[in-house]
Image: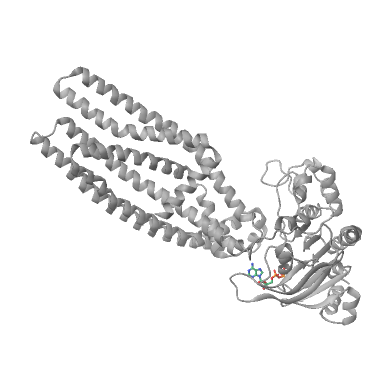
Length: 595
Ligand SMILES: Nc1ncnc2c1ncn2[C@@H]1O[C@H](COP(=O)(O)OP(=O)(O)OP(=O)(O)O)[C@@H](O)[C@H]1O
């Protein structure tokens, strides 16, 4: 029950936040329409008695009242629906914006990498389409309460025992709630196979995968796996829905028995002459309305229960995100320039939900103004170091300090404003080219000069030569006239985006040039590091580059070799070569391969 009230409160609060006038208007229409319905029964009874008594004036007046009430019910309901559609859109907008905030408005990304929370997010995404029904259900419930009140008064006037009739509504209500809970459990159980099946579907229908799927002849395999998962999800849903339907029917049967008893009670007393014909009409119509009200209540409660589950899930996810954020949000503004650098002090890290530390006892300083390269085998922990630097996760041991300030205590927004990053799995934002690059520094997105400067720093202005309208060209296959780019071209734009901010305190480049050829990558970083040294002399900014290409890495001021979650070697190229350790060996192997 608490869940139900919370769900109803959340929906009402959402529409109230978005549009008070429409919320009030829809409630008034609903109340008026709801009260009119049972009054029709009373007016019908008066009309019947007037007809039986041969009083044509009274019969006409009552008849006109019946007509007026019927018109009111129909028109109010119609206008109320217009409001529902609008309010449902507003509630959906409110919910989706909360979901976006939860999904990407947080400092950390742990909820995206936890399977259970990913399931919850996927169910919530689907649930965000249900507000049409939720708003209607909520307002209809308010109307139903009023209609039931008026009906109860009319029934009590006929015979006090008839007041028990709504009590017979309790079994169907309870059964309806049990049914909804059962269905909800089956939806949760089906969430994982549904999510994986949808991922497979996207994989099997995406243009990006077309080549590999053909070469490896994966079409049948994917279709089979997709089918198996879909069947598994379907089975779980089917059992839930079937049990739910059986429970609902059982509850309805109890009410049907009570309905028949109520009508028989008044008919018997009318036969004895204790009641008028109008009373019989009244009880038949009212009992039918009670039946309708009960059926409606069950359906409404099911819908409200579903809405309540949606908000419960949203609340659980919010709690998860809050609790796993690793402590209170930092408030200290980061410095405008770095004097000392960024220091890792005994840093260890274990991904949530796993038992193995992927970083152990990392002690290191990234000096202000330096270009730092991180190398190491796959899975060594390079990207994890980067994620900690960006503040996506907090260390599970030790701390990271920025000029002596604990990174965990720095304002997330402030830190994000002072860093820039380019990742290997960059996003192909299908916007116009200027925006695709410009979103790297939102306040300057409209400045073509600034966007060109970012592209210049990334040595990526040549991508524009292929675009009909230059910076204003719409990019992406989703648009009819959108220009499609090669993987390397998309990556160059992503690099331009990463370099939009001219003076970041920390620039992280996690294999951002993997789609470029080694020579192009080498040339790019040669020129980039010259520029960045000039900029770094001003604000002490640090560039961190993760790369597997030693020809690029060698120009860094400091090279870190990561292995098994530890820094096993550190120094510049000359020092590491002289040490004849892992770095020297790997450098020698790669150089020989290119010879
Ligand atoms: N979200 C995650 N949840 C659990 N474990 C993870 C997660 N991401 C990475 N790992 C594990 O952490 C370890 C380090 O991964 P990381 O991505 O930091 O390696 P990397 O050095 O960047 O590798 P690569 O060169 O392949 O990109 C790996 O063993 C990986 O399986």
